[in-house]
Length: 154
Image (cartoon, rainbow, N blue to C red; front, top):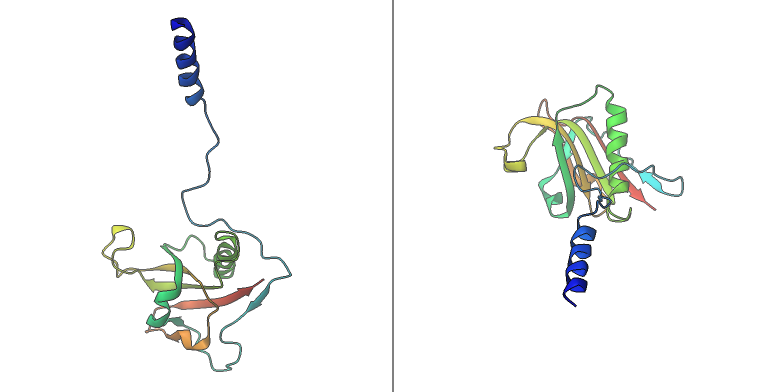
């Protein structure tokens, strides 16, 4: 009886120490190609006079799903904006993120990862609903450069 208890405990200890596969946890959402069955739309498509540099209005903060601020890793802004959109689609089960915004020279909010905020970095922001033209405002001089916003409907 004592031997079987010792063997059982030894086996249980060894089994719990075996390596297991890790699930992805760190970093931002994975990029996921957007299928042709999904429709992409520009919140500014109804306006011929949309500003080239724009930022999200404070009113959309309540529908923000995810935000990342980082130094620009590339000069290919088209590719980075597309990556942000594909991360939006790759978030969760690909139905949570309805709209994405990407721009350079965005003010980092205070408290972002413990930072005091205020510095200008590239931003990729996801939203829980489709964005409209009213969700944006003209950016202050030197901010929101190369702004890109799209909605995803699948």
